[in-house]
Amino acid sequence: MNEIEFGKILVQGHTPVALRFGKGHKLYVRVPYADDNRRWLQSGKRTSPVWLKERKQWELPQSWFNDFVNKCLQRYRRVYVVQPFRIMEKCSPACRNAQGHECQCSCMGANHGSESHEGWFDISDTFSFKWKDQELACRLLVVK
Image 1 (cartoon, rainbow, N blue to C red):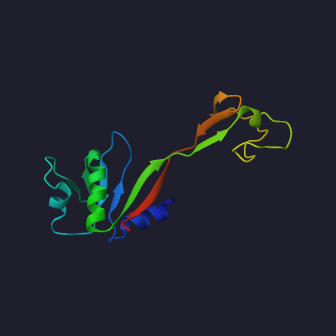
Image 2: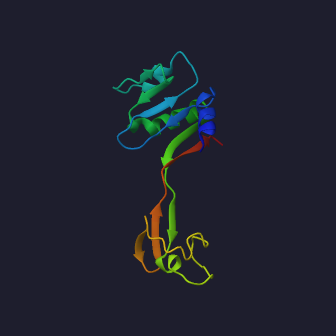
Image 3: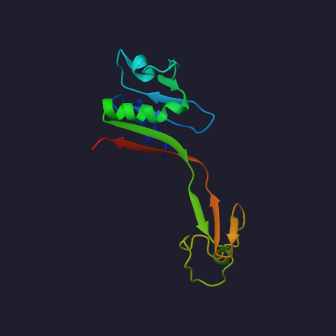
């Protein structure tokens, strides 16, 4: 997801957004304005949500994620979830070391004959993998 798409999702005001950045991070959420947002977010839990005025979003414990999504689906019928992900590339040493043009590997020829070994984890002669850089992904959950 590029910065423009990310910005558009954050500034729209009608669909809640959950921003997850992984373990060790808080859950950041944006919800359409309502007088009862703090009470609705807390919903009887001991910890209080923290309003981050400069960022115009709420900070919640990461453990509230599933509850937050369920409540948004009940109240708003939809919610954006933004979180990091990494694509795993698959190939094989036989493919990367190949001399000819025929490739029957899952890389579809992207690494064929490259002799590249940087970043690859060779599991066997027929399977290797490597992780690409982390990116942000966004999905819209909607009640059907």
